[in-house]
Picture 1 (cartoon, rainbow, N blue to C red):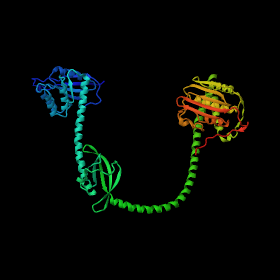
Picture 2 (picture 1 turned 90 degrees about the vertical axis):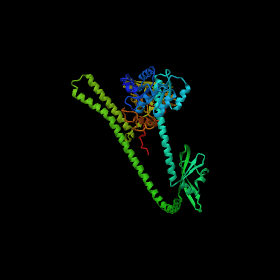
Picture 3 (picture 1 turned 30 degrees about the vertical axis):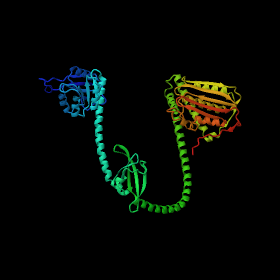
Picture 4 (picture 1 turned 60 degrees about the vertical axis):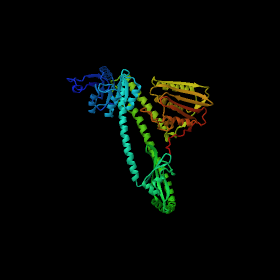
Length: 570
């Protein structure tokens, strides 16, 4: 908390006719500094003109406790002593009693206000005379406070408001004077303007016409003033007016309107300019332009055929360049994704192998087994990545065949969930449920396993905080419905339509590993099985992937699996 003080000063001994000087008492207190401090280093300079010592002490006590209002209080007992301080020009506000030893009543305020109208004055009176208070305020006082009926906050507020009102009043007076000067300059300017100027009030009545407008309209201002303006009053719109001169020639005037204040009221100023010569030149120019346009049209027809041929070639070239660019981008994305995903397991394998090679003779069996299992796990991970890439690569895909056979789905899914559950941490809760009476279901078990593994692995991977991972199996109208639901990070809506393309991933995955092949492989299997796949996701809530497959697969066993690769968009 900053330490500030309220300094109370008194007039010199000579001013008070005292035989010896009396030192000014200083009252220290602590409060927070105001955000709007006066220009004086000691805060607001207050002059208190009061001959009652009890009232003086009360004012001192109130100001001493005032928060956010640093001030210096100067106290005098007579009006003449107050004038001495006011003449020095360092007073921000005056607190004055109406009844002083050298002046009584309303005249006390009037004398101060007459000599120092720029200083705000607040009356402190023991009289509860409402008429006197109103008259004082009408004469120019900022406030009228009755002694004993105000507290610290009211006093400070009255002084703050009084100083601000006085500042605004002085600013208003200055602006009023500036406005008067500006209006005189404006009137002089439009009188001497070479363009015609007409002032019209909001009732369309002409109030002023300058000499240039008189000459242009061939009519005296006295005759035009008071007449109705027949033209448009749309501000910013440019119009033209034909004026017939006394010798029969038509004069064309261009008119522009702006909104102004004229004698304190809303009005319009119309600026008239003689554009007769310009219009004649425009007519001649238009004739030349018409001839030129005719010649251009003839030439345009000749060029149009050539341009059409060039456009066809340009479109073909642009399409070729676009395809090449998309293929290059796709290739770069594949290389970047695969390189990044392979680097981590290869680093782990290299690290564990180096440790076994260097320290195996010093290590117990458990650490050696741990590193061997780590190497095996990374090899399995790399094998899965290679399988995913080969699945989407045309030469390998041509060798894949759909080997369908009957599958006990409940047992198949339960066993798969148990296998995956054994490899996950305790923070993920894998659940399997099934509904309905399942009939015979035929499919390729290897590809079905790969599809479900991808869905469940994605659910676990993109649920870094853990939570439930549910696989729900339903039978409905000869359809098998497999739904995997998680409570993970979710997928932004603008990414959901692209995630079934190869090497596409959500924009909110952060540092989560992956190359973006899982869902594309799932979609490949679903489409080969004449099924459907749908996704629902919300950021921060989770994702649900729903796969619908027919119970009976119509493909013949041994049929090659169609290649599903991401095609560059046109």
